[in-house]
Length: 206
Image 1 (cartoon, rainbow, N blue to C red):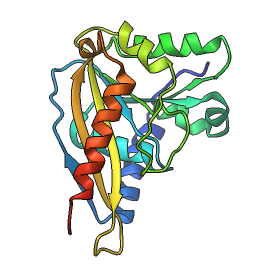
Image 2 (image 1 turned 90 degrees about the vertical axis):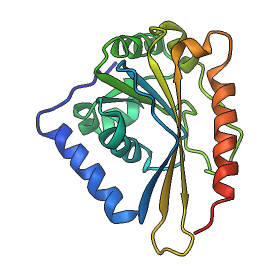
Image 3 (image 1 turned 135 degrees about the vertical axis):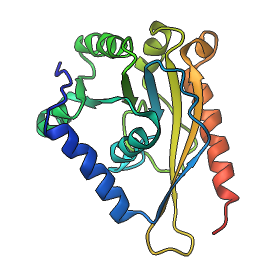
Image 4 (image 1 turned 180 degrees about the horizontal axis):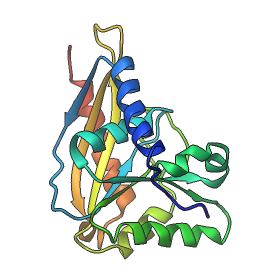
C-alpha cells in the first residue's frame, strides 16, 4: 500500500488551494451542529457526492477540527494523482489482501491524538438526494478496533443555491465516540443522521 506523507511544501499548498477554491466557488459555508472536541484523534465519516468532498473536509479541518489531515483513496487513483500522497493520502486496494493492511494502517493513525482520518465509506460518488447510504464493510472494523474515546464525527455535505448565483455549502455535523458503536452499526446510525440532515435542509429558506 501507499502510505501518507505530509510534504513541507505540498501539504501547505493543498491547504491553501482548498481554502481558495471553496472561497471562489461557494457563496457561503454554513456549519450546522457541533464538534465536541475531547482532544483525541478524529475519524470523519462523510457522504461522497462530488469532486469537492475532500476540499470541503479540509476547510472544515482548518476551521474547526485542527488535526493532521489523512484520507483514504483507491490505490489506482492515488497512483495516478501521486501528489495527494504528500497531502495525507494513503491507499486501499479493493478485493486484495492489502485491504487488511490499509484498515490496520488507519487504526494506527487514529492511535495518535494529533491525527484525523477522513473516510467516504460509500466507496463511490452518489447523488446528494439519495438517502439510501450503504457503506463498505471496512468502516465497522475500524471503529470497533480503535480506542473507545476516539472521536467519530459524522459529516453530511449538502448544497443549495436559493437566490444566489453560487451554491451555498451546508456542513452538518454529529459528534460520537467510538464506544457509541459497541452494539449499533455505524452505517445505520449514519443513515439516520443523513436523513435528519436532508429533512432539516428541506425546510431552509433563503
